[in-house]
Image 1 (tube, rainbow, N blue to C red):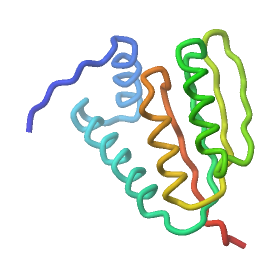
Image 2: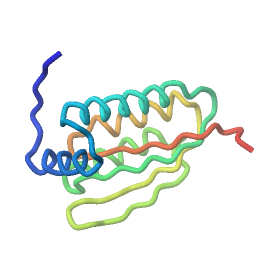
Image 3: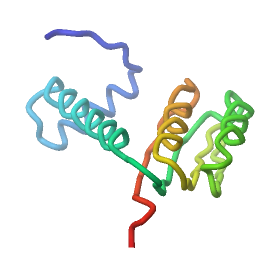
Length: 131
């Protein structure tokens, strides 16, 4: 299937540089692999059940979204046990340490990803009963 994408020039240049450095044979193959990784990460997050512990790391344009992010953090205050925030000019990076029902942590991840000014949300989920 053919499709088209709108991608900022700097992101496309970095993507092309990356797949070429890895020795892949085409941009199409690199995009297919990136899509598979995205789907696998989503499936892993969706498969989490019961009580979980998680670390969420995300970066965002501070002035554009900080008040909305604080509102979301308060909304999910039962699941977020601690946060850490680092300023980098107009951009910030934050980590949220979470513990609670997998569904609640999932919903928090999806809410964070819904903001245009949040560039990335990375998730590491562990079961809460891990010894």
